[in-house]
Length: 237
Image 1 (cartoon, rainbow, N blue to C red):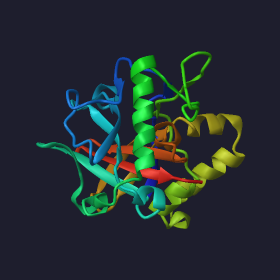
Image 2 (cartoon, one colour; image 1 turned 180 degrees about the horizontal axis):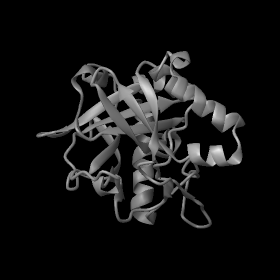
Image 3 (cartoon, rainbow, N blue to C red; image 1 turned 90 degrees about the vertical axis):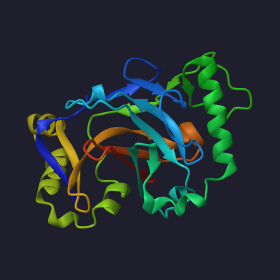
Image 4 (cartoon, rainbow, N blue to C red; image 1 turned 60 degrees about the vertical axis):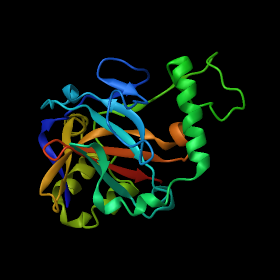
C-alpha cells in the first residue's frame, strides 16, 4: 500500500461546497440514488462529471452506519455501486449490525431538517433553537485538492512510511522547500494504491463528522472508478 505523488495536477480543484448546486446534492434521497439508508447514512451525491476523467455515475458520499467507526475499530470502510445500488462491501456487513448511537442519528436528522428549511448547514446546530439568522455557513463537503497527509488516518492505512521515498520527499518539500517547490508540490495529484485491489483510489475530498452527527473528527473520501467503490477513512487527531 502506498500514496503516489503524481506528475499530474490534482483531479479536483479544492473547493468548499456550502450549498446545493451543479454537481453536488446534500442529503440525497432514494429518488436520486439507490441505497439502504439504514446501512449508509447519506451525506451528499457528487456528479461523476466533476472528475478529470469523467464517469457516468453519480458518487454517493455516505457515512456507514457502523459504531465501530467512532470506537476506532474500523478506520476505513468501503461500499460499492452494484446492480442493486450502493451497498456496503461484504467484509463490513457483520460490523454494520453494531449501528451508531441513537444520539448520532438524532443529530443527523436535526441537521437534515435544518438544511431542508434553510438550504445550508451551520456550526451552531448544538443550540436548542438553531436558526439561520446571522449564522455562518458550514462546509457540506470539502471537494478536491490534496488529502491532508501526516495525520493519524494515513499512518493507519500505510504503516511502512519509511519505505515510501516519494512520500518522504513530499513531506520534506512541504516542510522545508522553497516557495516555488512548495507551490508545485501542493498541486500534484495524490492517489492511494491498494494492493488488494491493485487499483489506485482518487481523492474526492472530506467532510466533518461534527457537522452531520456531532461526532468530532473528519471523514476522508476516496473513489475507485473502475470498481465503482468508495473508501471512507476516519480521522480523529
